[in-house]
Image (cartoon, rainbow, N blue to C red; front, side, top):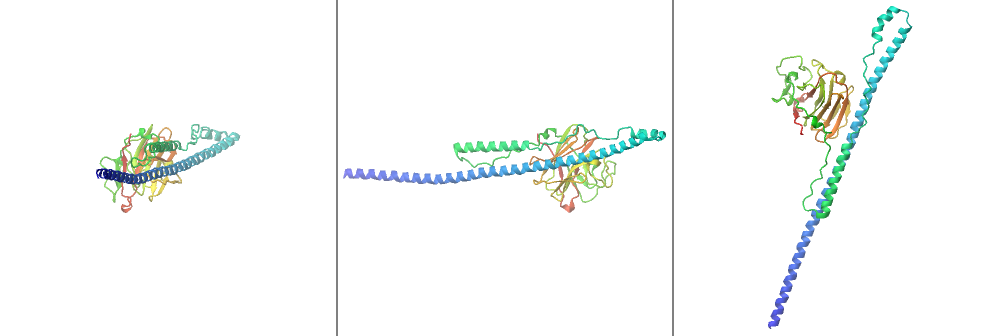
Length: 362
């Protein structure tokens, strides 16, 4: 009986051991199922983030290529038209000189000489060339960083598995070509502001009110177009500032010459001293040339960066948040130019938001 009792105890212990092992295996199965779900979720999220980021990078690359192609074609058209005008004037003058050389009327020759024998007012084209850079290098570099990050994340997962929720793969967009280093402190000049414009106390914000304010009609003030200039003029160097446009439906941003017409009806284009980007009806972006240059922008900017290189005659616009180039215009600046802002009319409250000059991060 004693042997039987001992054997019974041993068997019961063996049963308990096996029951515990079955519980352990069931627990492992449950943990395995959780691990499978975690791995599936993590890998799907990682691959999904990669595909999404690559598709976004591809769309941005195509947009940058198209914008720069259109900008280059537009600059070429302007240059060719100017050259054709100068060639026409030179041919006209050459013909007049040829006729004068054959004339026997020496009195007429003497009178005509001063106007025909001095060079006409033409541009020096020796330093002008086409910019063939499509601006894609920085986007390719950002794609390289993206792929490198994905490879690092994949190597970590291969070694450790999914230990924690996989974070979205960041797209390292290029900086706005380092233009932030040329950031300047821009404030609005209240003496130039149209009477309907309401400026903040720090002169960093402007919006259009419902009615005219009682303000002195000084020569600097715009009296018909709802716009305002920056306080400090630009006569040399490189300058960059950023303006938050938010959800506004209409606005104008850029630069204007000191000698522009400020009273009555104004024709806004580079020939009249205005270089600016416009938004109309929430979706229509144009640069104010003659005729206007339409810009196909898919990613609606919330903040616009404006870059000016005075010596090169360059003004460029950027989508700050997406870090995308929007448009560049090349011209010749011959006098002081000023930052230009127009929140446009408030359209009965539909376009009531401010234009806000924001600090540029270093």
